[in-house]
Length: 134
Image (cartoon, rainbow, N blue to C red; front, side):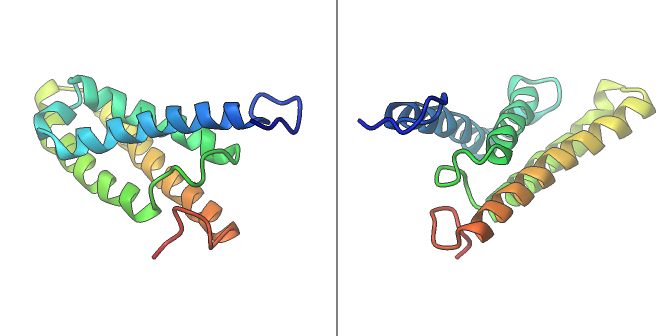
C-alpha cells in the first residue's frame, strides 16, 4: 500500500477505508429508498438518518473525496422525489408548527439539491471517472 503524503487521506489504506464509509452511507440510503416508505416518514429512523447520510456525503463530495463511490446526480434526484413525497404525505400528521415545516422542507430540498450539484460538478471536472453521467 502506498503513502504519498502526511494527510489523513493520503494513503491507499486511508482511501480504502473512506471508500467503505462512503459505500455504507450510500447503501443505507439506497436500501431505505427501496424499502417500506413508512420507514422514511419524518418521525421514523430512516426519515431522520437519510438526510444525515446525505449531509455527510455532501461534506465528503465538497472536500473532493469519494467521487468514484458516489451515485450519479440523477440518482440523488430520484431519491429526493421518493423521500419528499413521503415527507409531504406524512408531515402534517405530526402537527409541526408552520415555521418548522417550511424551514425543514427547505433544508431537506437543499440537502438533496446540493449533493446532486456537488456530484455533477465533480463528474464534470473528471468526465471519464466513475459516477459521471451516462
